[in-house]
Length: 578
Image 1 (cartoon, rainbow, N blue to C red):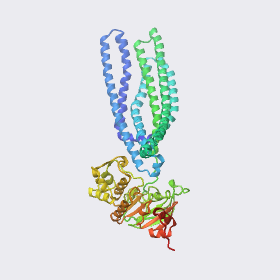
Image 2 (cartoon, helix red, strand yellow):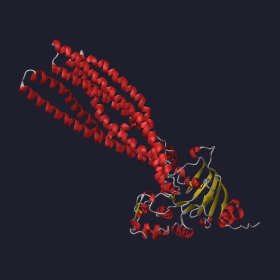
Image 3 (spheres, helix red, strand yellow):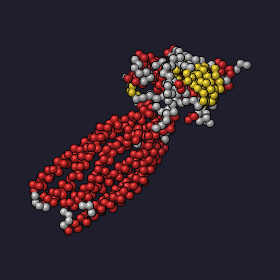
Image 4 (cartoon, one colour):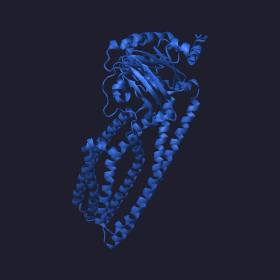
């Protein structure tokens, strides 16, 4: 929690002002019962109307001062807590932005979203309550005891019984509820995950008529969250009547023993009224302390979850003294590269990969599903680090190059096409900040996207829904290609990026890329041999190894696996020269 409290330092003025203003309100609240007792004993009992009016006006003035202090505390604490939440959320978001794919996979997207929203909101509320209730309750508790003792020390002994009873109830409730609040956040993560999966795959759900199944799946996780929440809050609900019972019994005891003192003439009626008010304030303040402690027990789960993100060690980051020289030639070499997720050498996805791509070459990668094609190209921009060997770009180990410098020289069209809400123009310009209208249109034409874009009533200003839901798969892929090539990067990676495009359109895209990206090294992952036949070099992967390497004609003669793929796609025999 100490680390999170550092986010309040820039806002020390409202953070300091809030408890000062709350102190003013508490002092005013503590003064009221004594003044009320004075009115009863010195005004009402003696029929002194002027005294009643003057003391009543004093009480009203003190009440207004207390109200001003309370309102000021609310404003100051709100400013502090909201700024705290905004700063913390920004830092957590920045930290997530620096995560590698491995870090993201560890937390899962739904959990990260929940931590950014629900958990940080819990911490905002904790700060708000701490600056108000955590200041008010202890001050009211201590001040009330002092004022009660000043009125009648013997009656104050009643608190020696009621306060320990209340503390036992609060301790028991906290001990039982804290694990449930942690579990509650985990169940909420699961609900968010199911919602996200369902919305993301809504077309698949409808296509397979699985809406009923998804409703049952959601009902299951939703019920689990409901039952866990009920178990957690039922403890608090049970606590409240118990606390009220102890408080009411304390008041009855004060009236009982105070009545004896009045009969003996050792205490006045007004003081009994004041004492009851102080007892109520003391016990209510203790109840408030219990409430905030319960909230702290709930928020502690959020503290832990937010700190987990902030404390995560980023496995992919720039070295202490990175090379900031921009990429130029785009030359790439893999030198005895092996890779296993999480650095696991016992389950290698890639094994002993060696190849060289000269500047301006087109390198195609073929292989069965799971052969490691996408993993191989993901090592070039350092989405993952090699387990053994090294990846060289421009004759430099990628690990020695500043991450932002490395990735700014690489254009990527991922297998899963991602577009952002906004206009088509915004999505293409996303690849090159400040790109002109002419550059955007040129990139769209190369990607064979200009014609269908102009078919929309608003053209390039057409608004896209989330993830580009109002576009077809092929249209999304072509916009993604335009976004990647607009900055003409030295290295371009196309990860099965034309799978939803027809063969003729794909050929036009490749022809345009060859001219537009002249001098750039292009990596193409494809399932169709027709997509890679013109490549300078084709790598055939099989179970994480390069089984064959060469151009189309060479592989037709030398690689049985390539022959098999060719035959399966073109449906004709392949004659191999002896």
